[in-house]
Length: 125
Image (cartoon, rainbow, N blue to C red):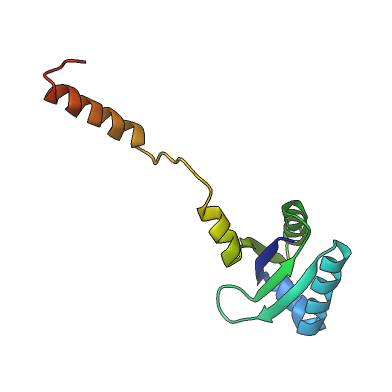
């Protein structure tokens, strides 16, 4: 199952809800929501800083994660950034996949090389 990191920032209304119900209640809500979608809550932490809470969770697929993010953010009480996490083994697999990438300006560089080559050959093609 894909694993995700959610960065949660509460709006002022969201903070009021946390203050009223408590942190363990919010964790229970997240756990129940994830279980209902075939997922699992691995970790839930509140924090100081830009984000108010960090969750690590598994769900069956990316569309489930997107549905959660859209639904939660749609309440207007939470801003949520969802990040797909990869294991070291997945990175190893990714590094074995051949990828041809042309960075921006690549075409210009290739044309410039061709022009330099033609000039060096006296304009002969």
